[in-house]
Each structure stands twice: as structure tokens, then as C-alpha cells.
Image (tube, rainbow over all chains, first blue to last red; front, side):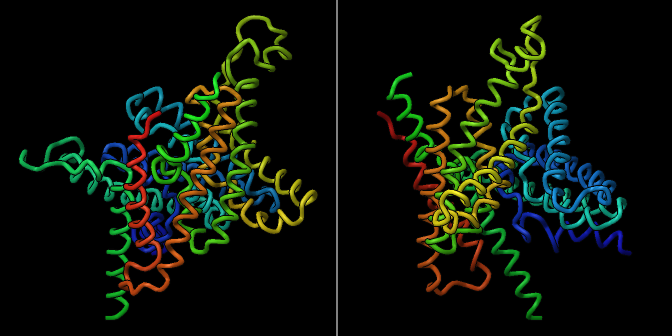
Length: 199
Length: 211
């Protein structure tokens, strides 16, 4: 019971992007296409699960005062692994994600989960939490990317989905589209929440 | 290196590819600290300060410790300039985050000691800056763009000014927005994002700027 709760909370109730509003920089920057969004989501999920695992294993050995630098070093190690793997096997994706792959290291979600969850809970639950949060992050990223790619380019995952008569709104692919999309999506979720509380 | 290219870098980082509105770096403080004008100015000043110093320090670290050149100090000291210089660039993520975290702590201590007045106005924002992706971002961009030492410093300072400009503009708008009669769902972060989108659209106009 508790296991599924820890997993599901990351998807909606404590969704890192829409609810906690953490780690927004990569969300807005790489959501120009669903392909990039999935790549970024996979990279962040891998780092999140691995760092949660290691942090929960060594939590008793870490002195209270220097825990943050230690967590950052652990995260940086896994980010470097992701960076090397990506540049070796997915050079095109690596190029389009650019500096946002090394910047996973300063992503608030990862340090936030290490500090708030993994340093207090068992290894098993930390892995579940990391997976849930990572998938929630990927989901949010894909939703934003879906809107932007369809409206801005007329495609979804590179496949044309709108008729040829549709004029793509380039604005959605450019920077303003990202801000406006996420603004309206958060407003929409707030509206649903408010309705639910009222009932 | 001529003076004109420095001005070009500065104008590019402040207006054309603004750090927040075009490159999407440093969004957490942008949404989080933009509720009041005073704190926005304080945060902006702290970011300009740390960004300039961080660009300087990370440039030195990269070019003298990590890059595979003849000037690499590890190559000169440990290998006595024998053979090929080691390529340590894969360590840059770890090296940069360590340097930035240490640097922010150090700057905080120095300001606390030298200028208590400045510390009172900037102090509370400094710890927030360590996990600000803008600082790490500007260090990585300096390396990617192959800037030299002076260009890196100018780019660091100009990126910080660009960030402050966007933050202060946003804070001014949000202070006025307090009095607006908005629907419940759109209050707070959503309207801030939509406004950022409109500002970003306005900043796109600078893309046509040329000398």
C-alpha cells in the first residue's frame, strides 16, 4: 500500500513541475519537441534513482554538517555518467539538449529528493520515490512538449498530425511559447484543484 | 581582442539572448524572488557579483587544470611536460559545481568580514545562488563559446545584468499585480509565467539589433 502511494504521489499530487515547481529551467528549455522531452526525462530519472539509492545507503555515514556537498558530489558523478553515455550513443540528442545535461546537477528536484526523502527513508522506498518523481517529471515535460510541438510545428514525435492547411505558430517553439504554455497548464491544474476542494 | 567585440558580447547577453527570457536559466529565483522590488534588486546584485567571479574562476580552472593543452598545470607539475597532456574535460561538471559551491561560501564569509552593510543586503540571497543554474550555466557557456579570459568576465557580468534586468522588471509588474482582480486559479505563479512569456516576446524584438 505504502509503496504504491510513494510512487503515485510523484505523478500528480506532488508532481515536481506542476505542483512543487522545481527544476523549471530544463522543462522550459528542452520542451520544444517530445523527442527532446523524453530524452531529458530519461536522463533526469536515471540520475534521480541512482542518487536516491546511493544517498539512502550512505545516509548513516554522512555527517550532518557536510551532507549537502556530499549529495552534490554524488549527483555530479551520475550526471557525468549520463553525459558520457549520451555523447557516445545519442550524439544528436546530446547536441539538442546542450548544456542542460550538465545542468541536471543543479536541478532542484534531484537535490530536493535526496535531502527531503532519501536521507530519511530506506533504500527500497527511496528508489520507488526516485522512479515516481522521475516519471512525474518526464510526464510534465512531455505534456508541455506535446502542446508546443503540435502547435509550433504541426508534428508529434516527428510525425505530422495536423493537416497541411495548418500554419504552424513558430512562437510556440520559441521562448515565449514555453512560458505561456506552462502558465496556462498550471492555471488549469489549479482550477481543477479548486473545483475538487469546493465539492 | 578588440573593444567592439566585448560590447557585442555584453549587448548580446543582456538583451538579445537574455539569460532568463531566452536561455531559460535561473528560473527558480526568477519566479520565487520576484514578489517584491527590494528583494529582487538584492538578489540581482548578488547574482551579478557571484556570476562575474564564478566566470573568472571556472575559466582558470578549465583552461589550466582540465583542458588538454601545453599550459595544463597538472601536465606541467605531475607529468613534467612529458608525453601528451591529459584530457580531463569530462570532469568539468564535478569540478565546476565544487568550485561554485565553495566560492559562494567563501564570498559570503569575505563579505561578512569586510562589509557588514553589504552582507545585510546581499547575505540572505547568497546561499540560494549555489543551486542556481544560471551560475553553472554561464560557466559552461563561456567554455562552449571558447571565450578568452576577458570575454568570459564580460559575459559573466553582462549575463548577471541581463538576469537582474528581467528580475527587476518582473518584480515591478508583480507588485502592481497585487491590486488586480484575477481569477483564483491564475493567481501567483501562472500569471507570472504568462507575463514572462509576454516579456520574452518583447525581448525577441532585440534579435533584430545590429551594429
